[in-house]
Image 1 (cartoon, rainbow, N blue to C red):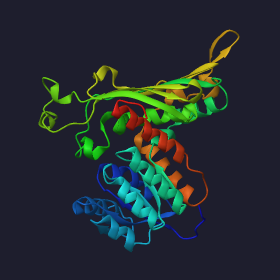
Image 2: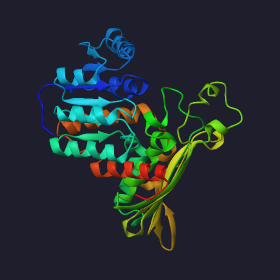
Image 3: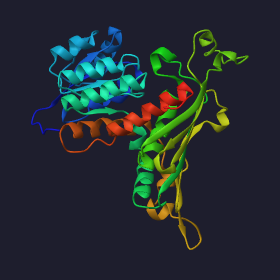
Length: 356
């Protein structure tokens, strides 16, 4: 937004595995930012990060540590707050930070509900600050190739997309239950390919969402030893499917499963257009030429299909660096408020089993 000659003052709320890997480790590597404060309700989490990154890792100055996010935000005059908490507290943290004039990068899912997401978006608009949710699959090389191909007319007009995510297990780190996580396999993992599909389709106006979300985990007759202790309390939806209608007849199919057979565990997006087809996983670009589909993958993106591997560390670093560039006015946020709204509306609509 504004160019600053000094380092941006950054605070991170939530210092568990995600907050550490996504935010802490990347902010300290950015030459335009200074990580001045860490907050976690478990002070030991923040202390561990500070010790490993600063005391043992040689970074300085050491950040201040907090257990109360309001105290951190109010006392540290922060330019940027990065929110790596569970979804149930994310809206409160983000809104408080925005109210103090900070820009906010928040983990996904954006919020437990569309109403709370709308409050976040409205507050960011009111105070003229950047709010961006970390749909970081957009920073993958293959996703960027597909987006450019579609944007440049490679498939004609996008008409239908399929977003799918099949994971072989369930998350076992942290209390990933419906009330805290924002809702199971779609909100936690399937949202990434779903967001890519929205991006590829050009985020047309949303008309309706239909879907079904089931929790079958506890009914499985036997579980791996590390998962058996979760049987009595794990209530996240793990078998989710939905169908989305946009304006002008554009549609999207969504599938998100946990405890899928390991043989098929993966995720991807496919998009059909009036004159072609594109997909990630695998990367494939097909355009209609002379009465047939022509595979132009190697012509458009030589070597990418064969060499690409999704390393989360790469996309998380790109996301953080991109957000800092946006705050400094060097770039425009890759994820728009309208797209963030659509992502959350689709999750809400499918979990409700009805139309929005």
